[in-house]
Each structure stands twice: as C-alpha cells, then as structure tokens.
Length: 316
Image 1 (tube, rainbow, N blue to C red):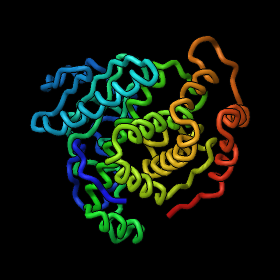
Image 2 (cartoon, rainbow, N blue to C red):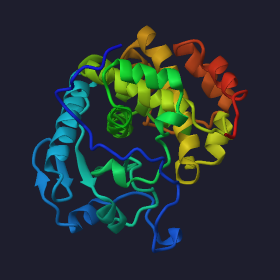
Image 3 (spheres, one colour):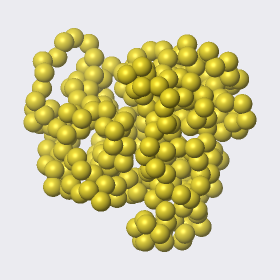
C-alpha cells in the first residue's frame, strides 16, 4: 500500500528515541483531575480558531491546530449526515507545560476527551515531548513493517505519529456515541465503539490516512501485554494511566475487531448498537458473556474474538 500525500497533515515530527514511561509531576496524583475541564482550558488564555469545532492552541502551533480542527470538523459533518448527530466539541492542542497546567491524571501526549458535555478534547502540540514509550526505534521494530514503511517512501516516526494523530477521531467517537444515545455496558466496549467511529470515518473520508493508521496499530500489536482479557481491561481500568503500552495493545485488538466488523455491517453497526444498549432507560447489568452474546447477534464472532485475546499474554 502506498502512502499518499495527505491534504491534512496532522503531524509534529518527533525524535527517534524510545521514550521512557516516566511521568513528570510536581503534584501528587490524588490532587489531579480525572479529565480536563473547559474552564481550565479557557484559563490558559490561549489563542483559538473559531468555528464549529473551536480549537485552542499553545502559541506557535496554529498550523497544527488548524489541521486538527479541519479533520474534526469533517468528522462532525460526516456523522451529522450519517447519524443525525449534532455535536459541540472544544479542542485544545497544547505543549507539555500547558498540559501540566490543566492538572489532569493522563500523561502528556495521550489524547483524551471528557465523558460528559461540554466536551473537551486534548491533543499534544508536539509529539517529541511525550513520554508514553509507544514508539520503538526502527532497529527494535518488526523488520517487515519497517521495510513496508520505507517502501512507501515514508519516514518511520512521521508515519507512526500521523497514525497517532488520527486517534483524535477516536476521541470524537466517545462524544459521538454518547450524543447518539449509546450507553456502553463496559469500558472495553466504550473504547471499541470510539474506534469504530474513527475507522468508519477514515474509510469514508480520509483514505490517505489508511496506511499510517495501519502502521500505528501494527506497532501497538507488538507491545508488551501482560494483561489481555476483557475482564483484565475492566478490573484495571483506566489501564492507560499505569500501563500505556498494554493499553495500546488493547486498542490494537479493538481496531482489529472493528476491521472485521465494518466491512460486513458498515454504519449500521452503530445503529444496531444503539438498539441493544440505549442510553434512555435503566438497563439490567450484563455479564461479559451475556454482552458478547448480544453483540454476536449483530455480527457473529465477538465471543470467539474475546476468547482469543486470553491466550496472547507476553511481557517483553
């Protein structure tokens, strides 16, 4: 697959080193917020780009902020037409210093969105400042994957971070699922749905991002993953705070299942998910097996996929 030149470049090129997972913090985690708040973003007094997706940014990063805004405005338009969703979203594209000023639990560089309105999404202004430990050096990566990237005429770091930038489409998906009226019974299905929103949009509107997204998830599949079952994911949530690479592996597994379901069900999967798990009313608690059984009714294979995850543990 050839890497096309994107009209939207959602990238700040990062260094080639493998970043450590240490998280800098001058304050104890107990004093931190679980998610960003709109008022703390506004308190930064950053410049912003007006529009349907108002986008604040650390001074010096207007070009990157504009590219992200255009991408999200396009996703907003897509789901407005496909599902009738009208979603208000504020985005902040911040450097590490301003991210720290928000006083949130999530490490710098991990894209995020608030659970409830007003929806606020965060994306790093500069990938080179992240400490997630998610980009392996070329010498430590799968040689076949590195060869594929080079054959496409692309750079290793650039391709990975273009794929990582597309994760903002996943964050949009969280807000879109709630706005649409789907209430995921579990954390893992919440993540799966957000990835479904992301992949469906990219398939339809941004085929030029297919290759970087493919490379991003291929790298994620190679991460150390001590925890593998869906029950592990639930009991250790939010695993992204303590084991970011293990969390990346889970996200790759969700994406892999999305890629199996989407060609068969398309956008209709989201419509059927709303019928199964409506936000209105009070649903009875479901066991993991019951939930997977319901999903199998929409698209067979969820139970088998879940069982297959349990035999893949490693601890590189």
